[in-house]
Length: 199
Image 1 (cartoon, rainbow, N blue to C red):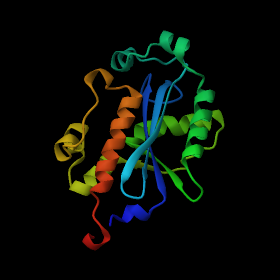
Image 2: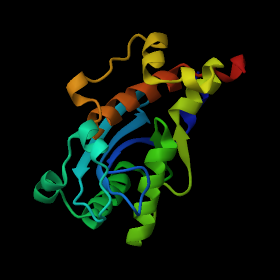
Image 3: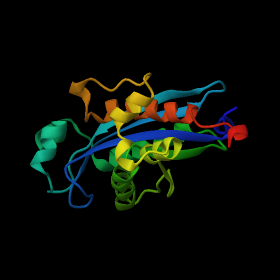
């Protein structure tokens, strides 16, 4: 039996799109969350969350628009305030976490998504529902397979786990599509961890 089956952790796979490399100077412009939990038989995906955010800061790298296609004009017309979005994230995490369970932030290259998410919680004066912990699936892959960092990319994961299917090219850098794929990556890695008798 996989040792994680008895762990009461709820995994929140999070992907962000931003207007530049660092928070405070640049904006978090979209964020998505997909829940992964042990359902009694296997790890499976649960509910999801997606929001677009009205920019708070002037910084907007034109090169990023070419990646995610979320322009300032689009965000001002269709986004919500960062305060509304982060309150909604808190409500979502609370609704998805039962008494005795722990919410864990998960990212594929977690430091980038964690940096923006944690910064916005602090800037808005909200308590971060994930605390100070995050799980990086790139690092998990590195440890599980003894691979160098540069070999822990999503294409490499698809080669190792052929059940994985990357998002359609048109949806790459859509936060929800990326968070959903990231949840599939997490499940593949969790189900491939050794049992206690193999350690």
